[in-house]
Length: 396
Image 1 (cartoon, rainbow, N blue to C red):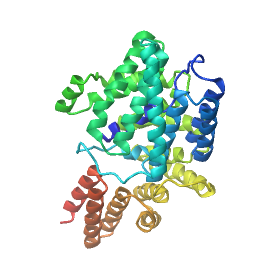
Image 2: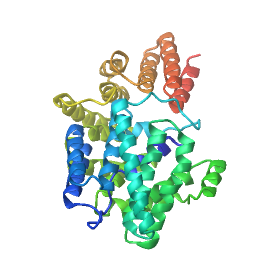
Image 3: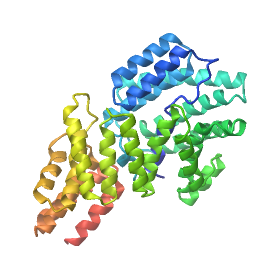
């Protein structure tokens, strides 16, 4: 099962097209401000706007869901698991041991998610074919499933639970085919199911999921063109999917669009640079990462965990491919001396091993590759481990 299955929350962040009958305009405006701030990495401002939304309407299900989502985003940010890199590999276990989340953010999530679900369920019970009510129910259930996977590491259980979100949003499209925002969850799950192994795919069909990669991707693209808060969520989903599909020009188009929309989000420059790197456009990657590092250095706001290491690891790879050995080595040393996640350190060691091998130092290369394998294993990076093992074989 893909790590992408962990990322399902990126498609359920927004409020969709809110019904003015059920929610106050003041609350909805503060929710819009909160998401705009969150996408710009202004987390304190986002939380303050949500507090105002809840004060304006304590029973607004969208406000409670938004509060849960932003708590969940904060947990990912504090852990450093907020980039496309985290969702391109494979998951080989039904559950993953995760570091416990910050207690305050976890409690914020649980409290607001529970209230959002309570309100959404009551609305669907009263109006079982109302598209707004169904949309809200599917969205909060999807958020809960994503939290279980990404924060608690309960991959299989969350995947099964998410069928309720899929069913609710399928029903939205049945009742009102113009609601392209509901196609975001349905399309994402269709895409995921189409790429699962046959036994897991069959299990997904049994619990109610549909498949079809091309149709799934088309539905996400339609959601990205549909006005509303969910439009941004769809764009972030496409940034990930286009990278997975190796449609790098399309991924860069989305990244640049998001940069214009959220210019204070420095991590969008990281994503653009990483995309150029995957496309083997190393000069372009170095230029984008240079700009992103300048933005990071000028930005005094909170950093995601291991952020310095991420930027320099990526630029180090670009410089290594360009033959700038000393500059590459300087960059690649930063993940080894600063706060960093294990998979980043592991991949930095693998790159340093390649530099050593090219310099004719086989013994140093072997040491680097062995460290890379150890860190990849510890950091749940199976593709990084395979690559390091293959590199080690070359020098034995």
